[in-house]
Image (cartoon, rainbow, N blue to C red):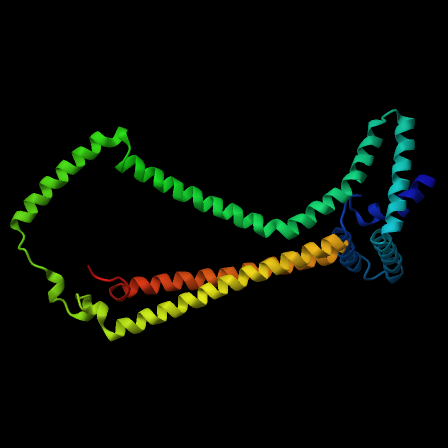
Length: 278
């Protein structure tokens, strides 16, 4: 009978969670079980009332740090007695190790909330750098590497022969000077319409640079506020500030990237105005 009572009074078993569960896990388990008993005991209000009282009591007990610490100590003591009787003393060491790892796990989650976005950006930058390095390596291997010199000479010889053959039959005409301005003629770059387009591009670039500086400042302020709360011991506020900063900067970074891509596309469409002819 005593074993059954201890099972019922164990809030971890009532909520069906592990002893390392966080406060968020406790609330989620309580809400999930409350929905389940509402469905199961909708025709038995007295049973529903008893089960709901058990769930609420278990949740409130685990959310109270002092009560939860007492329960953890009781669980360790019971585990110690059980393992002593059964001869498996290593289970006590495992439970003790789990209890010791709880604050480190919470600290790790807090640090990830604060520094996670920065680490993601560093990883993204490393991926971009590796792509550029691969392209540079390919270009060097094809155009400059000593082991490909024989193949380069053969390709250049073949290309020069083909070019000389076609050049001998092609008239020497500078087609660009006969094209109108709207088709990219040589005077298009100096037109008034192109001057307006270049001014718009310059203004858009200034706005993008200003937005980038604002995002850097906002990110620095948010992380500083989160770190200050962490130093003061207010971990909940530190998590909140870190999460808000990450969400805000991620959304604005995405919008800024879209604006940059749009500007590049427009520059390609207006290439006759943004690239000065030789």
